Image (cartoon, rainbow, N blue to C red):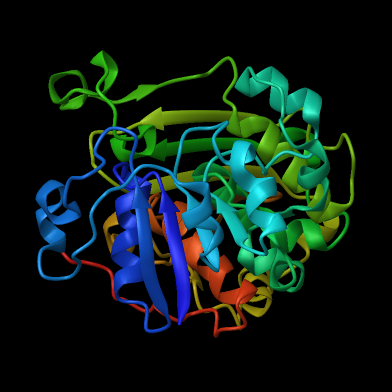
Length: 348
């Protein structure tokens, strides 16, 4: 059995991670930490877990975490990098669901997250954990930077086009993305309370969102083209639902791209991916079709010659966070990638 520790167990991604790992046949969750709830039973805070775990929240103890095979950090940015080196030195694998190991560009990291990186050498050897695109590297990794939720939809939406040269105009990509309020985390703030979000729909961080540099760096790595995506437009929106994410990506096709059967091209690219579903032509994907499941669905439209619209949906807490982290753990530990992740989406 794989011994697991979760640092930060009271947030939405932390409890989602726990929900997935409690039904994983090869995992024992040994420790679940919380700065504010140490000593409290997990099922008292999350009644949905009654009868499924006897865990109690505990303070962070590095020695206890070192005894685990894998430690997940479901914490704010800046926490994982304080402890990662000590854990790696103890041969414990680290998967960070925040941003500490996503960006290789230290200048960009410091600019967008307002802090210096505490282990830049370890960052260099960490692997960006988008399972479908970095599978072989993830298998041998000690530290994983789990991708952001928005960047996951953008990368998997564009990857087939970027892996083949000269199919799209890289300078005219527009990403219009929407997320449920759980994407902002489990914290009390005026902008997140019910009366501020119900019956409303708004854009945010239009002048610049911290996922934009992650998206650009990742697309450069996928395509092998540096500075090709500096003009990408990314606008996130908050919609009045709890979980779910929909990104609509607008791209201009080159002549080579326009001559391609895009639907067949995407179907062939993802034909062996268990968690990426290229929907039939003319489909209208809905976020509720992936609620609670580790699935990402893609639909393709050509409203005009040389214009392609890519619609990508996922559950931001599962495929966009905790589910993808479990995919990465499975790969790192030599398990089948889908282990513990084959649950069916909830409907309605």
